[in-house]
Length: 478
Image 1 (cartoon, rainbow, N blue to C red):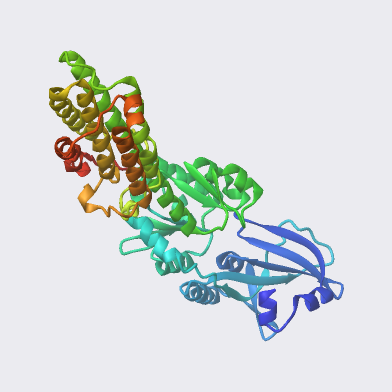
Image 2 (image 1 turned 180 degrees about the horizontal axis):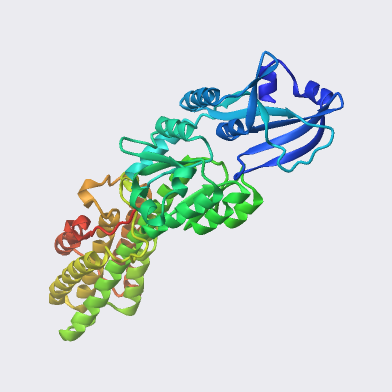
């Protein structure tokens, strides 16, 4: 329709002059499609497809409405013209026709064609794609292009969006088929563009990347893409242009067909996973210290530092609102500047020693506070012990917001929900210390300034454990 308007015709007018007879559909193997129309009782075959395919099936070309023999030299000249067009990021189609005899069969009909010309189409990448490619590269995610387009066109587009850089290479389907699996594995890391490839080639590429230990995501929209989508670790189908078959074979459906959405989804996934680990780090550190305090006081022959109701209270004020606020912590700015994590790693793989270190400090702080309080009676000792434990956890929660940064390197006010949660928990705990009916229920007593002078310094010890000291590099390429 667009092309007919550009040459001064309208599709509606053409359909009145030409009667549709038959169609030979496009296939990735043939790289062309044809239609047969009837005009003035004469059937004419019109063909479009990959320029090299169309030219190889032409024996003549049209000049001023006259058919001229298509020589080898002319073919080379025309192919050079397609390279020039493709170098401008145009998708190039070859156009040809053939007048058919009165009786014919569609088998092998696409031979001895008359070349008409080339049509160049531009499908500019979205503005945000180049930035998304850059973000993906910084995140350790390798993006490659696998397309049916001409190699020159694909390379031009890849360079335009920053996909290809110095040292990167491109190959086409014929070059790919000449490589053994071992040869392909050897050069795969340097190739960013695969042009003129078939659906079978895509499956082979996915398998090759998997052999190299990569985590592979594949996007596709056609019926023929289904095997490769199924073979990939994560198959992503196009929601707008994708076929039902590709959607059924995929693991995810991209509703807006936008590459940038994939990158945004990866960032969101990383952020959610980080927040889950923050949640785990905080809860396990806190609960580890509670278990150790109870165990050590028993071994040392000291009175029980927490009553059952006090343990429930401790878990209520520390494990509820502050822990939940961690789950909605803003994602760190370097989320997409880290390499992908190894899928085989445990959620605790980089947390265990941090949990032990902080849990040990919390245990020591609580025991010191409890022993100090025993000088003033068991009820006062228990009140000081539980208050030390509560305050330690409510202050320590701010040191759980990052695996790579110390609490003093973070913006303390970027998570206002966490601040409100901590203030709420502090307020609730103060209520059981200074409101008489609650003192009776929880068996607590009011604390003096002298008591707070002991509690608060002990409660801040958890801030002085830099999380980055306990990290190990355990990443994998994507």
